[in-house]
Image (cartoon, rainbow, N blue to C red; front, side, top):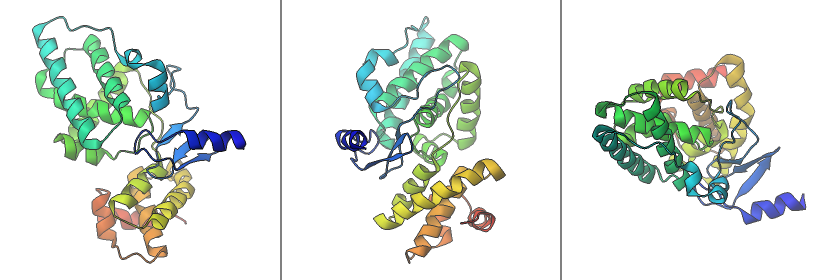
Length: 258
């Protein structure tokens, strides 16, 4: 217990910089934004999902692929991809290691197929979303689409193709993290944000059991917490923040037991 307490005090969240970290079993989680900072999930490639501390220990070069563009077109597209990734990382306020890993994955894609200039924006957006998912950083797909200016359908299409081409797997999304993200975006009180996380934690098992949408479940947790804490917020407001319809939110609320 002393070791865990000391560990929490010495570390900060790579996503929001908070020192408010808590262990959920063997998993270290930021209670401010829901980022999973350390876990034991292993992908099919037997590689860890990188935390910020992993990036610092391994150094920047561990994220840099040795793939070198061979043609002028490849060089031009690589520069474009890096520029788009940088812009999206800045807009989303993501940690530096997300940038490095996204660029690394782009270079790996160069070995698998020819990447046309017109699809580079969608690929860049999909890579940032993918790397965040693999790092357990809660990031709604709709927000990536809004900040990148790329249609969500194009991001989803390229996301699926990248997973197949690079033979990658991603961990399930952090429902607690999504709930806290939505609650903060709704400008709810800290106690309501904390309650949203607790309710989402109880509801997350229902996702695998009945195929619920993670974003919808998170929105249902936030709305439930807001009502319990007497916050003046409507279903429509929460639905808009979660990028779902009011009907979808009502269905989630009716279908879940809490």
